[in-house]
Image (cartoon, rainbow, N blue to C red; front, side):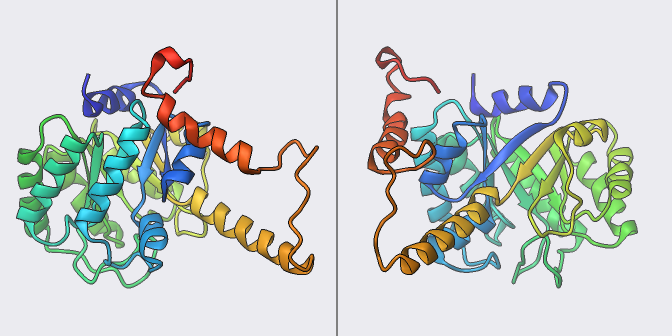
Length: 287
């Protein structure tokens, strides 16, 4: 079964399917302990790969290479990839989509922003004329085989959100995402507007959207939820805290012996070895 078909079946199942945002191979290795689906977050990738904000710096060969590494290490996980606006040109968008499907991605998210683009939860977003975006989306849909395509709008006004959500649902896209949606009532309005088309909800700490549980999202009719940055922000906090403690201790590392949750070289190596053993069922490692 293809990765795209597997994700389609998960979306069709009862409840909301969660996909966890990962920004590098180490965060993915940890996320794989807890969830069976990844979201290759543009925010996280721009931060970890370039040390830059998510405002259009990502080059498509870099995102394809990261997806290839993820798929090699995690052959059974869902992998949804943020491709921003398809890197501006429709032909490039189609090429990237085909490359990602061959690399083993399960799906992509294509947005309707103009460049210079911004994070979906930032102010100052500008969107393409609807007809122009729909033509790009049509070309992308025609270029894939079984890859899931999520059509995303960054519209912010209620009337325009509804107009675009309806158009995206009619386009043949597999899933609709309204990014930066600000209230539960707005989610309900989008759900009603798009009919039977699956709905995706994006949560990011400190963002514009409400913090909702999977149970609450399921009750709202949300089929897929992406958590863009829990790994990135947790790493930010933990690294900063560890270095402050190291500095306060005059450079003496903490004693990890006898501390159940402490991580040292053995624990780290054991985690990473699983990325090899997942490909060798006879060696006894699970997914």
